[in-house]
Amino acid sequence: MAGHSKFKNIMHRKSAQDAKRAKLFTKIAREIEVAARLGGPDAAANPRLKTAIVAARKVSMPNDNINRAIKKAEGAGDGADYVEMRYEGYGPGGVAVIVEALTDNKNRTASEVRAAFSKHGGSLGETNSVAFMFDRVGLIVYAKDATDFDSLFEAAVEAGADNVEEGDEGLEVTCQPGDFAQVRDALEASVGEANSAELSWKPTTLAPVDEDKAQSVFKLIDVLEDNDDVQNVSANFDISDDVLQKLTA
Image (tube, rainbow, N blue to C red; front, side, top):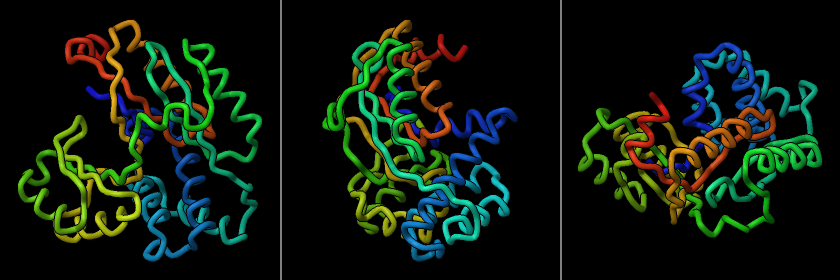
């Protein structure tokens, strides 16, 4: 299992827990608000907003919540002035970690992220201290039973994608960030709606971890993702199937 853990993967795991559901909706609403403010309220003309709305609907976020977030971006509510921040560092076992956040208080978020790293066997570094171990890509994932590999590969190449491979979450289509919206929309028209579609940090190198280190890495990621300001967490750890079975038993 390659551990490029993303917020999208954790969303589904946590959405069944009522205590986590409100936090999840708040994170997605924040992304919708920022996307609408930056690119306008028309999802058809705003790829980032469309991606956020798709993510909202995947977890059954009410339309009222979606519309309220868009209205805040238009000035119809008390929208906060959020800024995008990226934090980088190393977790247990030398695992590289990238944290993406939307915050209205950079000092608070930086302090909380640094504390999470420190308390769970890691250390926060400077910007670009680990980003060189990842590629920024558009990542579109289809369930393995949604289509066959050859058909998806043909459609993806025609749409302008770079690669298709079988991954932990299903059939993964990757493309350049600038081609993401075009590839996603073309595949949706020819293959159907994907399980997930977003810009992602994909590791180019992986750090093998044993059971103890894997537990520590998962704990760090969980703490980071529980932070209200954190939207995505990516990490480059790799664990064996045997260790994964022990951790999920």
